Amino acid sequence: MPIHLLPDHLTNQIAAGEVVERPASVLKEVLENAMDAGSTAVEVQLEQGGVRRIRVADDGCGIPKDELPLALERHATSKIASLDDLEHVGTMGFRGEALAAIAAVSRMSITSRFDGAPHAWRIDADPRELSPAALNHGTVVDVADLYFNTPARRKFLKSEGTEFAHCDDVFRRLALARPDVALQLSHNGRVSLRLPSSRREARVRALLGDDFLNAARLVEADAGPLRLTGYASLPAYSRSSRDAQFFYVNGRFVRDKLLTHAIREAYADILHGSRHPAYVLFLELDPYGVDVNVHPAKIEVRFRDSRAVHQFVYHALKRTLAASGAGGLADEAIRPEPAAPTAEAPPGSRQAPYFPPPQQGRLAMEPASRAYFDFAASARPEPAAATATTPLAAGFTPTAFAPRAGAPAPAPAMPASDLAPPLGYALAQLHGVYILAQNEAGLILVDMHAAHERILYERLKTLLDGTPGVQRLLIPAVFGVGAKDMATAEEHAELLERMGFEIAPAGPAELAVRSVPALLAAAPVGELVRSLLAELRDYPATEVITARRNELLATMACHGAVRANRSLTLPEMNALLREMEATERADQCNHGRPTWTALTMADLDKLFLRGR
Image 1 (cartoon, helix red, strand yellow):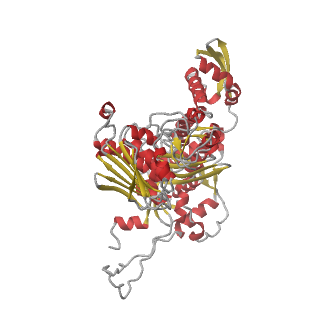
Image 2 (cartoon, helix red, strand yellow):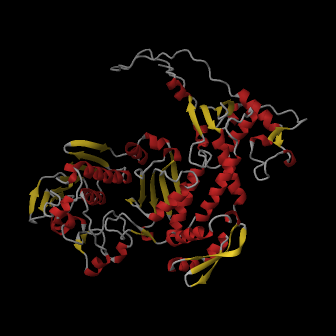
Image 3 (cartoon, rainbow, N blue to C red):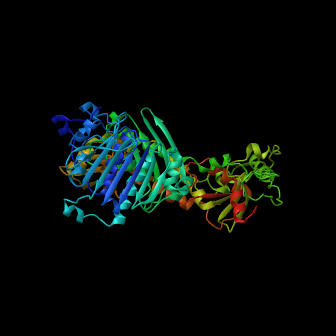
């Protein structure tokens, strides 16, 4: 649509705000306009951190001559025309305030050539006069001397390096959202970042590095109108800050407490509380289902069905992180044999011919495979009366496996290539702490205590899932609450009862708790219920009870897991490996530490300089 003035009733429906907080705010607004114009290449030039100059050149559709003066008016936009358009916003910008606000505090000019126009036109914010200009195509927005007419605001700006860092953050956020657009960032005449048009994976690799991608899981989930894609890191790549967290809703970078809560809950079972995950996630849904007009900088959103979005993101991430990383090892090929040297190098090639050194053939998998299958064919759990472990943990300890006397002869082992599991077969135990195993790709190192702790923990959760046992209190716990907590308890009474809580008003500002989940009977009732009500009030779904229960189960699993310096037999070690492959989240222990790592033959060759 052409740029036009919005009617008064619509401008009142759009909450205007201060959009020019610092140079990075200017860069964000202008870059978003460039993306909305259908650009395929954008070049950004900054001087003195953006305070002296911000110049953004794109190859988009351009602005017609007659609409250039209108583009500088407040609430003038080409992206919405009615309230219905506002409820279905699909563009990055829509308020029609950015250019007018920027023009009010800087010396700004716009040069643009509309598609099909004989030449470009230029307009200065002050005075607003049109003049012919030279430009091949697209638009150039030049913002100079930010806050030159508002010295008080300029005093609050930070150093040049700090302001450039903020601009760089904005640039990277938008670059992650639009890998199809080639982008270049320069500062004080020096190119800082050049990103060609590419696929999403290549753009993520260019901006976050190989370390992130190597430690990340691919996220792909669909549920009706909702779709979540991107990458989420494993706990081994966790950070001490939130500097590597990027979440996009319909291509717009947002910081939303609902989404942050869903992600934190998905990581709660595998990540230490003081660490933060790294992720690049893209949520797509019908624009009608999200309100982007709730924050002046458009960095916050509100969902119409917040509970559905929260649960979708939570379960999608939880399923992705729950899958065992050992499955990926099955797809790794054994190190390829070096190609034979060619008799004649290609013309112009300076590469020296490669002569592979003599190499021993790879160690066969059959002996370990046969030993394991022989053991598995004649093994069964010990009778309950013959073990000293508790009934709950009897099936989990490695000592619960013992050969049965008089067992039939085992069947011949199948070829390893058909049955080789991802974590391979145990070779030995190192200092009573680590298990060394061999798989098709190379060497596997397992922390046996951490691995067994995770197995026990997941088994305990499985046993206790379902309707919780309820412990009635001999004397009801009475404590004071505010009006919000009282209203929340009444509103969610049915949900609280399903969780195992019987809560009723005991006065105008008091609640009485008559029963709690049996597993949490020893927990401080008042503190537990207050945190639960606060969670229910702020979020449509809560995991407080599950989190408290899991804390207790994690402690039980830690005490029940096999200890260091415990000598295991090969069959016991192999049994542990098989349990790991069948257990969710087996890559990390209950404290977020990795339980195993792999060294491929290529890694080992590199370590020992083989082939060089």
